[in-house]
Amino acid sequence: MPRKVSIPALRRHIDRIDDQLLRLLNERAALAVSIAEQKARTNSGVYAPGRERGVLTRLARANRGPLPAQHVRAIFREIISASRSLEQRLTVAYLGPAATFTHLAARRQFGAAAEYRPAATVVDIFRDVESGRADLGVVPVENSTEGMVAHTLDLLVESPLRICAEVSLPVRHCLLARAGTTLASVRRVIAHPQALAQCRRWLARYLPGARTGEAASNAAAAERAGAESGTAAIAAEAAAEAYGLAVVADAIQDEPVNLTRFLVLGHHDAEQPSGDDKTSLVMSVRDEVGILARMLRPFAAHGIDLIKIESRPLRERPWEYFFFLDLKGHRRERRVQRALAAVERSALRLKVLGSYPAAPELTP
Image 1 (cartoon, rainbow, N blue to C red):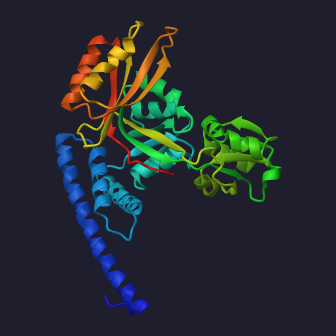
Image 2: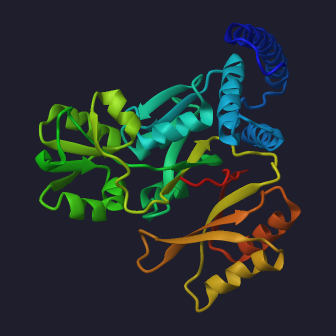
């Protein structure tokens, strides 16, 4: 196109492109409906995290700009969400109310076309999915500052649910309060315990005289801040708009690199490898000297990278532990199958929590 073209002419050209995009989007949607019909005949699940991850990765790599890769991902995530809703509108349980970080993570993964069901606690998320009130659930499992979420790990041990995807979300905490509130007038700060822990140094420096209190979620804290003069909440910026609050201070987390990892739970994990997968498992072992080192040898012998090991106490047996492991690979890969079979022969208990596509590497 010639360089000196009038704005009206450029806009007419954009309109023509928009018409083409609309036609192609509906053509894509019709293909999605055809796939849905075949899935229905084979009783296949609607949510295919490996396939969706592959589409987004391929398009981000093929992108030549000027749109940045993260915007390409966001656009096509919504296209996938809309297409998926033609097969089935998924109901996704999350730690509510609206505008929690768990809600934001769920929206990042499933887009605007899903139906979101707030739950009061992480236990309720598990129950909603186990009972069928929700198709999938999103729960926090790890923060780069505060480490693992122990309650989520404990629930995974006994739940029949499987991990089918993971989401990594940059966490940017804000101090929210009623409009007109200044930092000097804040007398109380409330938030989820994890958020309070992630902002403890900031609070000690800028609000040393303010009392702190815990809430079931940051969004619940935001609701309370809207009802109480002199009370501020630590929450996402999205909560300010959702609950009619003002941002008193922005980015108050102690660590600039603050990421939270969330798990997507369902009745099935991602059954087919995507090429970049993780497998999570939990095992218990005998109380013997050197037993953990011996249990881990099969992974090294089969060239499997262990990326996380976390211990949790066995409630009914003091000083004995469960071990949670994340490894690179999918349970259907031959080398992973062999390693797991070797470990299972020596473990008191081995439970594969799920294989799923690894979340893209993110920085805040």
